View 1: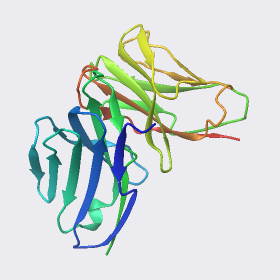
View 2: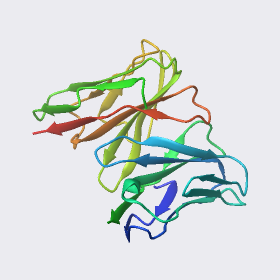
View 3: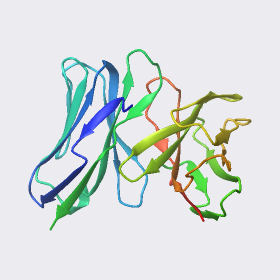
View 4: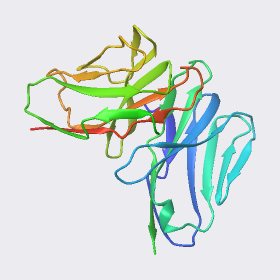
Length: 112
Length: 113
């Protein structure tokens, strides 16, 4: 079964609107990573969160790791057409060293 | 990202034939991975290798085989036993298996006719 759940599967927004994707695990994660895959491309690492309650920002992107280390979110403020792609979260479960479990991804479409 | 190559970019095979996908990295990474991507399925782990001459099955290893004879290379063979091999195959590597960022190659799109 799916170890890391990610929602929504698809999101369509108008350029300038905000976007959020959520990642949840039934078990505690030792860390969580976020990747972006452009259409026709391959996943590219964005960021890693390790600490409980951690918040990191990259320009218009804000990443959060929950206090219980079981959930995470990626928020994009004022989306642009360059944000189009699929965003994946990937977590390492506390009991299994090294295995990254990927969520199914959220495919973001931005209308100009 | 850079430093991992996969070939070919597109591959066509007839049903019942084995096919080997190449993955090479010059990043001096110990760990390497193979993923399969289907629409709406995200990334599913086929095999991974922590170090040379060692590899482990992932979540969907049936119908696939790998080898890790060199640190730089981790080829994946899609055998005739794989019932639905048409997919996008991604190779990745990381410094180590434990909690490390993975760097992906450009992928190979396999189409079995």
